[in-house]
Length: 428
Ligand code: SF4
Ligand code: SF4
Image 1: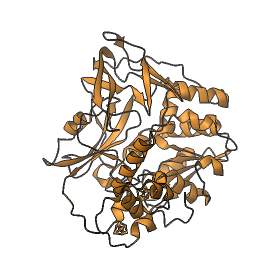
Image 2: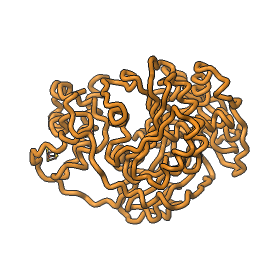
Image 3: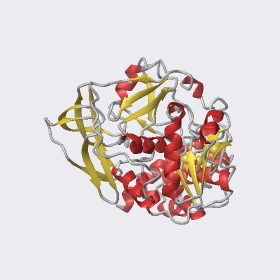
Image 4: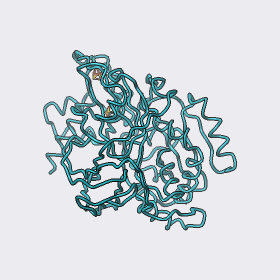
C-alpha cells in the first residue's frame, strides 16, 4: 500500500432520489434458493429433500477457517439442491425451498440481553447467529471482534457512498431502535470506550433522528461526513474520523468498522433470536422501469426483483450485482439475493467508444488506494506478472473510481479485475 495517495475521494452523482423517498415494496417468492457457499467454503447440509422447514430453521453450516450457519428464509418444503449461477460469476449449489407463504418462525437460538452477556459470550452469539457484513462483503462479523486488541473506536458505517443504493438508509429509517441497540452491543464486543456513527452530511432529514436516538449514550456520537466517494470505504472513513492511516486492518490504528445494517441485524438476533433471513435490496438505474427498494427473503432471484420493479426499461441492459462502482457485471438475472446483498443496478446498455489513454494521470490522482491504475491495466494486457506485483495490483479495492474518472472512457477497473483473475490462476 502506497502512502503517497491522491485526494482519495470525489463527489459522484448519487442518483439516490430515484429510490430514497418511495416506500419499500414487499416481495414474497414461491421458492427461494439459499446459496450453500461462503467465500471459498462450502456448507454441510442439515436438511434433505421433503423436510419441512420454518423461517429460521438451520439448514446448513460452513466449517472451515470460519464458522457460518445458514438459515431458511421462508417456511415450506425442501425441494433439493440445484446448481445456480452465483453473483460471484460461477455456478454453485443452492438449497431450493418451496415457500408455503405462511412465514412460520422458529428462533434457531435464544435471544440474549447484551448488557448481561460477557464480551466473549457476545462474540460467540454473533458467530452462532451467522451475522455477516451487510455492506456487500459478507465477512463473518464475529471474526473481527474475536481477534481485535486495543480497540479505542468503533465506527458504524452508515455512509452508503455507492451511487444509487439507498438500502441502508431505508433499513436505518425503519429500525432506529435496533441500530442503537446493535451499536451498543458491538461497542461492548469491541472493548472500545467510544463509537462514532458516520453518515453523509447530505442526509439532513435523518441526522436529527439519529442524534436524538443516540442522545442517552454520551459515548456514541453521530458524525456527518462529506458526500464524496468512496467515503464508505473503511480506509477513507477511518482517515476521515481519526486522521490515521493503516497498512492492512483498521485495528492497527485502534478501530473496528461495521456497516449500519449489520448492527441492525445483530440487534434483531439479540432481541428476537432472528438471523438474517430478509434484506432490503435497492433495484435502481435507468434500465429498470420502476426503481424501488424491495424487501425480500434471502434466496429470492434477481429476476423476480426485476419483475416486481416493472421489468427492464430496454431490451439491452447492463445488469450489476451491487452498485455501479463496486458491483459485479453479470449476464443473467438468475442469481439470488444473499444475506450480504444490498443492490441490483440496471443500466440501459449504451456501448461506449473508448479512445487512447491521454496520460492525464487522473486515474492515479483519484485512486483511493494510491495505485497507478493505468499502469496496472497496461501490465495486465501483456501479462507482465513482475510489473503487476511491483505495482501492487492486489491492493485495488475495485471501487470503480479509475473508470469513472477516465476522460478516455477506458474501463480501467475491469482491466485490474482481469489482472487479479490472471494472477490468481497463475498462483494456483
Ligand atoms: S478500482 Fe482499484 S485501481 Fe481503480 S481507483 Fe479504485 S482502487 Fe484504484
Ligand atoms: S484517467 Fe484514463 S486517460 Fe487519464 S491516465 Fe488514466 S487511463 Fe489514461
